[in-house]
Length: 409
Ligand SMILES: *Cc1c(COP(=O)(O)O)cnc(C)c1O
Image 1 (tube, rainbow, N blue to C red):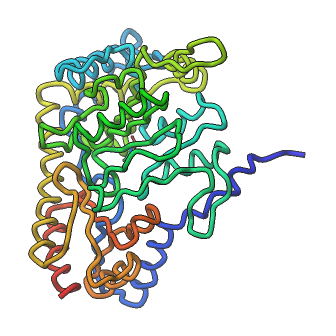
Image 2: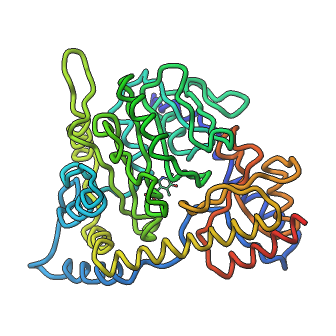
Image 3: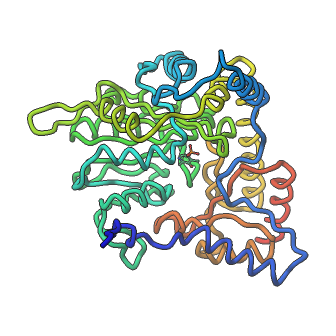
């Protein structure tokens, strides 16, 4: 008899995006002429930067010639990509990360899930609420939780609320935890964490022996120089944190796939009488289960670090940030309370008139023909909030602001 991984049965049917799709389909069927604008999904809309496209074309030509052809590459990534990542993303900012601590991958989503391979059962796991659902579901699949409760939370996870009361940065837990997921700039709230706030978490992890899994996928959207772009800017983080980054949101790689994870050499965990290196474990895991990102894609990612690539990537980020600024301004003029949107491509608004997240979703769809994401879909503490994504065309953003006025006034 085949045994399945029964932990999968605890997963709640992917509720959020299918339910959005269902309600939009129902509305569109009843109103076939309504042209619905979607500000819902966290996917980019603008094409790849020209420097990236050019580098990928050249790389395809390399693959077409015997003397420049590339077969299997190094599992951790080519030096032509790891070197500029370490030099430009870290060392140029005074952050101590070396190229051999950078592991190139096909996505931060994959890495945040796959990293659980190197951890055992029995860890106490803290996540923020609301949260990027991948952290939760991968722990459920790995058997690190109990069943889901009626509220949609899982037994065995510690949920740390992030709301306007704590500026969307969680308080330290009042019970012991081992693994802590933090994501700043944050999806879904668009919030950032100050140096002081992150230092408190790094100190906590150092003092208690916990490990921070830091998702910095939106680092490029930080405009405020006082906000840390990497967890490794904080004292002591090299022995308490792993960082995930991605080319998806800064350079439009959501469909091209390239990302990286930094696992410092200093990071060890006590196992019996031994200090075991998490860097060595992750290297072993990747070498065994992963054969690297394609040469063509890594060449494209490396072009992000050229002068032209840096400029073009910054222009893309600025374009989305301007969308976010327009959304925030437009909504504030309507008297709405909005958060995020300054150092992140997400705007997190408080639903007006005490509506719950789904009631506001229905109102916006029926009166404004606009689709966003109900905050409650990201966790119980997201109730009463609503996420708008700045990943869109300027035309759609401008039209959306007009339609908001129609929907909420
Ligand atoms: C978009 C996103 C990522 C990036 O995932 P990829 O697999 O690299 O595309 C990672 N974390 C969060 C929170 C995200 O929203």
